[in-house]
Length: 390
Image (cartoon, rainbow, N blue to C red; front, side, top):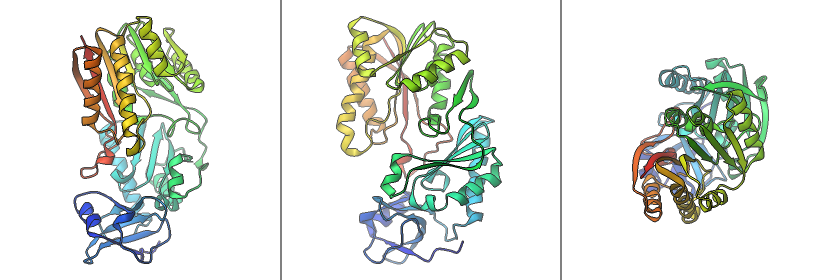
């Protein structure tokens, strides 16, 4: 692959943002002029001619340029292998043989718009930006050379690809990816659906928070937004009763399968809306020793934040009312637009309205295989707190 010859000139506000450590250039921060085709690798300079790095250009996204590297070099096979190798080495040191982990986490691993998750030797790859999509086969080749996986599945069905003008597709790139992949997470046996499961099959960013739940226990546990039972299964190790709630019958069927796989007869599933169920349980004066709230992102953009704040407060308020004295609330938000300070305000307000004295036991976030970049707050999105209520 020859070095890029296209150039994008960034206006002073965008250049200042890059100098401060950010890796995105928004469309209103680039100078008018002839622009390259979508997906091109471009040389990024400012109006004074200073070089800022090499990046992926998108003709349709509000993010016009995603910086790949601040070095002036070709984005070729050698570069891709280097990035994959460095990412793999970081995970090897951090995760010590964990069978399921994120190998490539976009900008944080030097490959913007790229996600690669490993499940017991099988890789699920997503290329979510025009530039990384153009290099999908080359990225897969680099992963194959560095990891020698059993298979690579291209899972390019997320809605976000439409923002880049990309088609949605799922196709096998290498080997054979089975419909279900068995693996172990801590003390729990799981199976992952890489073809149709949420994200790439499992919410890997919550792995450490799920593992931290194992010693918490609690006689009665309520897991809202349970998906396939990740949190509920870890809680079931010490609990005498676990209720897993989700709107998806398919997800709950898999949660029930996982319960049987682990020999749990005390985990039951309830299909329904978590908001409605929390109201119903409160009206029945139910009490739980541990309640888990891991909802989908309520704020997918800044315009949705006011409604998201109301939603987060309502579920946390109702959960606090259901907690037995001394009970624990494990509550999470994966909305980047809801800052940690906003999340704390929501929880403080919910505690006040519930008339409960609440202590913060722990504050968690995404695992080390979902690294956070200094200067790029968008990479710090997951918040997971453990609270106790008197």
